[in-house]
Length: 301
Image (tube, rainbow, N blue to C red; front, side):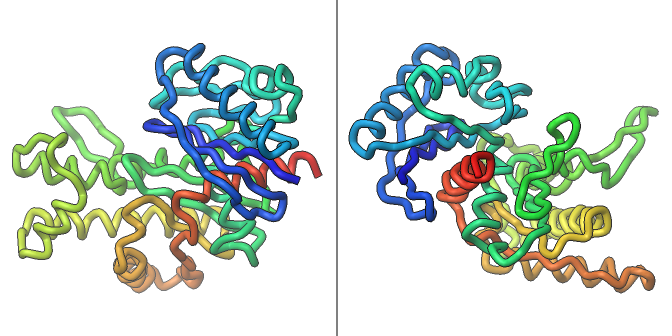
C-alpha cells in the first residue's frame, strides 16, 4: 500500500509517496500560505488528490508544528504558520476526500522516523533533542511517543539551566535560551553589538577557527549548556540513547565536543555513574516524512 506523507514547515510543505515499508517513491514540495488558510487548504488538497489519482494512496500522514492533538486532528499552540492552528485537519484533508488522516507534531515525527528506520531502529526507549533556533524534542517509550497530559512531553527547551539577577529581578535561563543555536548567535551579537539578523552560527564558528576570543567563549558555553541539558534528561528518563538533531548536528565534531563537556560534568560528580549515550540522527530532510507515516501505521495497527 502507498501513502502520501506531508511535512508542514515554515518555508515550504514537503510531500512524499511512501510505501508501508518506508520506501520513498517520489518527493515534491509546495509553498504554503502561512496566513490564509483557504489558500493553504487548496494547495494541500491539490497535492493529496494528485497523489490519490496517480498512486492510489490509501492514507495521509501529516507532520506539523505546534501542539498537535492527534486524536482530534486540531493543532493548538503557535508556529510560523498561524493559519494552521484551529482547523480540523482530519476532517478537511481526510474525511472530505475519502481518506484516512493521521497527524503528529514535527519533532515527534522526526523521533519516530529514527526509531523506525534510523539511528534508534534497534531501541525501544530513547530521547530526541533537536537543536535549532530553540531546543525541542520528543520522548519515546516502547517505540511510541509519550506526549504527556498537556502535549508538552519532550519540550526540553523549557528546562532551567541557570539564573541571574538583572536590575534586581531574578531571571531564569532555559536550555533554549542558553543552548540553542539562536542563543549562540544572540550571545555573540550582544558582545559585539552586531545585528543578530546578519550573523549566523557558521560565521561564529569561522571566527572561532581564526582565534576570535568572543566566538571561542560563546561556543564553549554553548557545548557546556547542551551537555548539562543532556545530562539532566538522562537522569530524568534513563533512555537507551539520546538522539541529537538539527542542522548544527551535521558538524563533524558536534557529538565529540558535547562528550568532552559530559566528561567534565561526570568527572565532577562522583555519584554519577550513568553516562548518556548520544548519537547523531541518521535522517535529515526525510525524518519527518518517515515518522509521519510510522505514526499513521502505529495508530492504525
